[in-house]
Length: 83
Image (tube, rainbow, N blue to C red; front, side, top):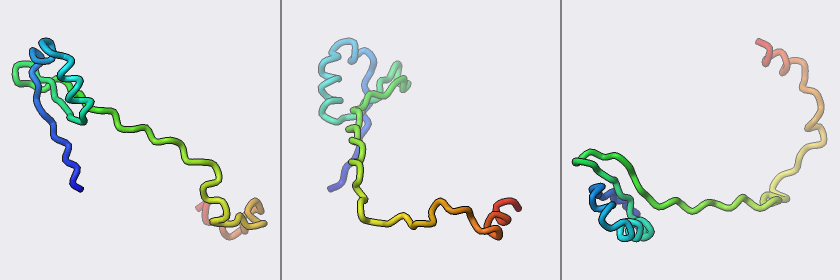
């Protein structure tokens, strides 16, 4: 499904005259650009849904931390970092 985000210009006068209809349009998913004398001054758009944090342990069992994970790096590798 194609999701096109259409931006419609709305004069500030219309916003003053009927703010509830403007809010309704935004709640329906429309992005509106407020204009003053045909000059864009603000954008009103729906807030994207906030993603919930990923659950702890989502990748449990997908990999194993090796026993030598915390061991010091080999000397030749440390030298590569220092160059």
